[in-house]
Image (tube, rainbow, N blue to C red):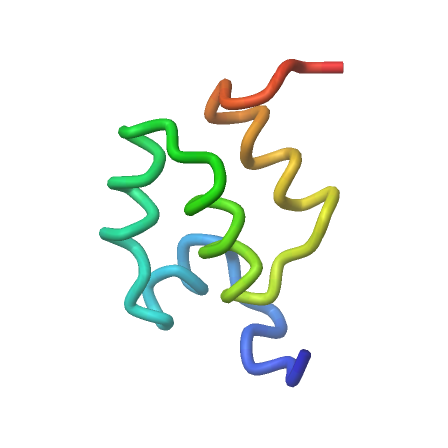
Length: 62
């Protein structure tokens, strides 16, 4: 991780990386594998990704 996204929100990361549209499409298609790949590409990790998946009702709440 090179901290290029340090201090940015998830939306800012998606915008800066040019992945916003791809992410939105993956969410609308409920394509969890693509969503995870995109979020990892913008330097998010495990618990952050899980929370985003839960928020979008793509995995069960615990």
